[in-house]
Length: 442
Image 1 (cartoon, one colour):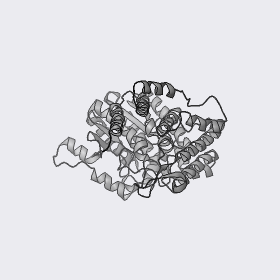
Image 2 (cartoon, rainbow, N blue to C red; image 1 turned 135 degrees about the horizontal axis):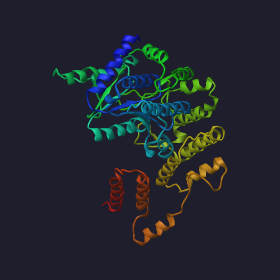
Image 3 (tube, rainbow, N blue to C red; image 1 turned 90 degrees about the vertical axis):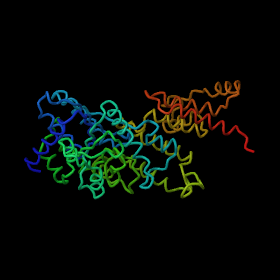
Image 4 (cartoon, rainbow, N blue to C red; image 1 turned 180 degrees about the horizontal axis):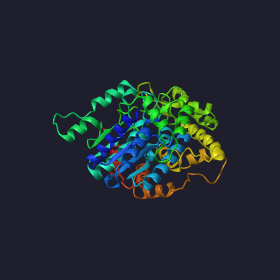
């Protein structure tokens, strides 16, 4: 990476930025490639006259809520510094996080619904934790601006499949206009969103180019690139990219990302952190190994289902409770020592709702909590005994209790969202189910 090549790349970024009114969305994961891209963009826009910095740039980081805490801490620090510096430098750039919906979170699916921990063939986590939050943000900006450009740290040299995917989605147009020529050279189409384009500034860079840039130049917002190098040295892995569609490689292959990742046989990144002094992560690694082992102990921990290939489906309720208790044990020790929480109250509420659908009592999650913390009163989920009143009213008006109870669970579940999508569809499904059950079959 020489000075001439760097100046050429800065000029290319500026040319694309000035060309149209499409706002930019930068995918940032905290790793080397996305950090490199973000710093290039920042430098390019900072070197433009203030009056030409005409359109907004969002930097989004997908937080799955199960990221390795060491990485989360660095990302949070970086975003704070980035936002402060952008304001001082009068650059229309802001960094923020996007999160999965509560009902799509890892623990709600694993413990609440009993999904077996992910594998290479059943990788249910990627879409729910990564693709959906990023896609929702992009769609929101598309609706407000018509079209957007998504900027990623993708490189062709990462793998043959990555290079082929990038080639397949290049924009092809025989019309020789300045606009089409720029699009042909720099952009490719988003695989699922028609109004979104993808720009990969370092697609032709090699790994050495990335590290040369990061070690030769200081972060323009005052971050420490040397700390990033040390993070990689500790983890011994690679970054987990912001995933925007199914063509983007998801994690697995020793990347630092989710600490609960069971897609890989052995999580070398968290092992690397532990071996390099982050011993406090050891209970988390043991929990991860436990849920991977339980997945394979099918007879002991999973429900037998003749209709499924392999005949075993979700975790049994007893196993879900065991997993939750073990998670509380890890969290209890970590919170007392480091103030670190591993599962949010909202997720515990969602888990309780899922368990209620399976006939569990309203205080089932609370009992798991109390068994670990040895408490009899305060807990993150309180059991409010409304069942008796509801049952009486249902009996009075000859309405099925189970149907109304499930409808109330859905209504409460969606009440925290500004846009309560699918609420009527979900309520209608309960009515239709009850209607089918009430019709006698001859």
